[in-house]
Amino acid sequence: MSSTLGQLFRISTWGESHGVGVGVNIDGCPPMLEISQEDIQKELDRRRPGQSDIVTPRKEGDVCEILSGVFEGKTLGSPIGILVRNKDQRPSSYDEMKDKYRPSHADYTYDAKYGIRAWHGGGRASARETIGRVAAAAVAKKVTDSLCPGIETIAYVKSIKDLEANVDPDTVTFDQVESNIVRTGDPAMVDPMINLIKEVRSEGNSVGGVVECVIRNVPAGLGAPVFDKLEADLAKAMMSLPATKGFEIGSGFGGTLLTGREHNDHFFMEGDKVRTKTNRSGGVQGGISNGENIIFRVAFKPTATIMTEQPTVSTSHEDTELKGRGRHDACVLPRAVPMVEAMANLILVDHLLRQRAQCGL
Image (cartoon, rainbow, N blue to C red; front, side, top):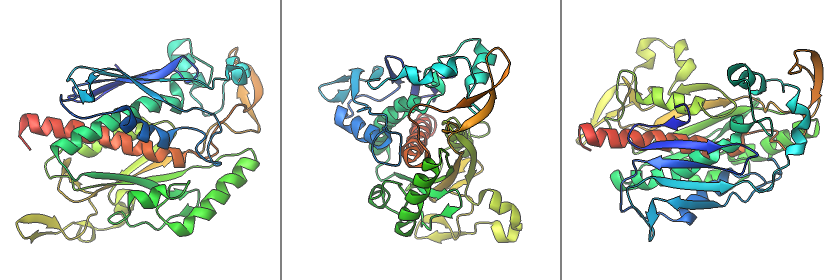
């Protein structure tokens, strides 16, 4: 079904934004891996609301509960269930949305498809659903570390509106990204980006941008052509995140401006290892990893909920107006960083397990 991702490492997320809680079921996790509530909580704390003065002020601790699949600190090999209860619910903030469609939200399309929707906070269309993904990815990282130690996934804010960070994906560190609340790897862009977010928020407006991600030390051979190419699965995973509108890997759309002679990554030998002199392929060729760093970018639109009056349509199909209410991010980029990392790790672990099953690692 549409709430399930993966073939061997398989996750299913569930829950609505203002329901009892949200969570995930994980199937296919190998046994005997050490995992704790603290391991999962560390990742959830990076995506939770209320963590700084440039994100939504919704006060959620996002404390996870491991319901199954772990005993005495180790995975059992059976399904792992993880729950995060919703605590700071304010469904009354959405009363007007019961009868009016929010512009650029999923309100109308959910009604058009299902004939019913959880209009409190957007239900399944809310970014709160990603809690299950981030929790599952914390488990996935444990599997990846056991199968292929040294793999490192780091995402960071590359741009917000027209402000672009200068970040070297080959050298940026996790600590550099986490040292600032906007989560960019360029110290010179921290204050300008923060100021821009605060400015648009004060105007009742919102802003979007780009998250870039690098995956280092990936072995050659991951990916399953033709339909499960590594970059195809990464693209689907990233585009399944709320507010995403674009994906590119390596040279991306910029590569269309080059000739083949300019774009080709030439091979050379480094000891007994095949390398490429450039990495315009972004670490993937023919849908299979080539051992170079995997580098991709994800475009996030401006947050759809803004605190100004906008034209819209009612559920009875009459023209009307609607002003946003509730607690929302003026820019999703800082909290999107751990979500992008999570989706990358979920795709990576599934392909590692598939490679081991078919060809061995």
